Length: 280
Length: 280
Image 1 (tube, each protein chain N blue to C red):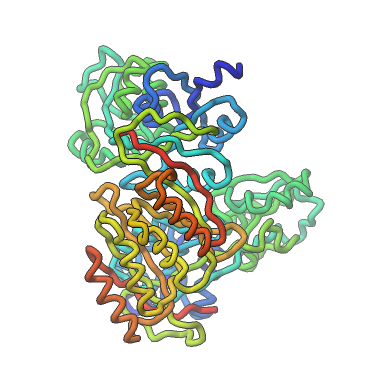
Image 2: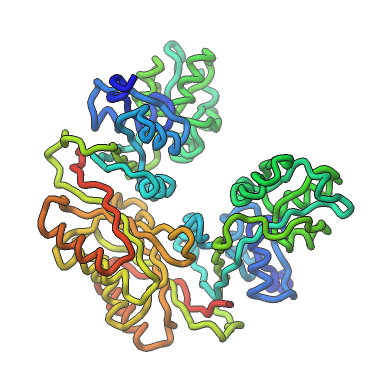
């Protein structure tokens, strides 16, 4: 069990979810997948050793940060060992043999249905039907042998369940990307060496004038480029905040070490979440 | 209609919701309330003139920002005319005549049930029952004349529907506050003059090194104390961000005007959301 667990990668959703796609992109085809029903379950699978790695979405360019996962990153002591982003592209999928003119309704997660508004406007004969999961809607379509319905999900969901893609890329916006983190308990040998290294950390700032400016100054002084900042409430300290920061640079570089030393001086605590190379 | 509308205050939820409490605290008893089913509907009621003012929650000290309302603040052109915070305190409410030992289950919104875990642990005979709204659970309890059940909601929900409070303040954490904004179309004469004025704005930052540090510098240079910063994705510009900032100071002060002028120089756009005095 312990030996085979080393290959398991936990993710939230059904097989064929966009997290599944992110796992393949970052880790290749030879992984074993552990689908989980919630993000909490993904983190627990990594904690218990049931999985050796986990993939979680952290932000989307239309919807913003996945706040629950930011909170879990602080609560659990895992390392960010990689990141990648996936363009969210929706396919209209049906059972083999079903043609487009037979389709009277399309099942998917409400967020995905909402991202294909133009498609539904141009095809008023096809009714959007909310379902709990994108990939799960393909699975259900195939299991129930629905011959007058389709599902909206990723191309990999079509592959996974043997569905046929009737219309490709029916999403309204091409600017829809989700960024994923690869999490581990132990540092990994980096697989991707092409992207410039990034570092993520979280710090707690007291509610005193100018503290955030001084914290930002620790990075600016070392010419480190911040790529993201996210604030979350500091639990038990009303109106104080935690700040999650991503910047270009690796913890092995001397200017990053100096920036962190300075940051520790002017904040309540700093927790390093990992240095990693993006998979392009 | 137009005349009477001037007194209506739109808010999300049923009468007796925490937003209702915030409205009374900021505007007094002589208002007319317009309950809405969604935040979108609250903003639309203000836009259409159905209501002259609106109350929306903007952040909670346990859960963080209400991101949907941040997005609406950018989309609609309203002014923040006031703010207040309310301690979220949960009461166990039943029909008059029902005593504590009769209660076998307690209805409320899942978030509220989750905030009273200790109560349910000490009273295993009372089963938590999820319902769509806190105040709505009191309303339903009274309408259906349930004699073996209770609801968990605010004291004002008990008042509104004629329920009796069986147990007070059953929430786990006393550090649970929600902050509300009062929104208007036109500037209001400030009601509260006791709190120090605050200003809120949103700016868009290009994805270039040090831009956030320079933006923070515009405030630090004028000795303006930031009380909150929230980032949201910049729609249509993947991996660029909007920053919502609150700081102490009024737009009528000269150092605030200088800070805004400098901020406009180093960002893509600045939208002022309002200067207001908190109601303590």
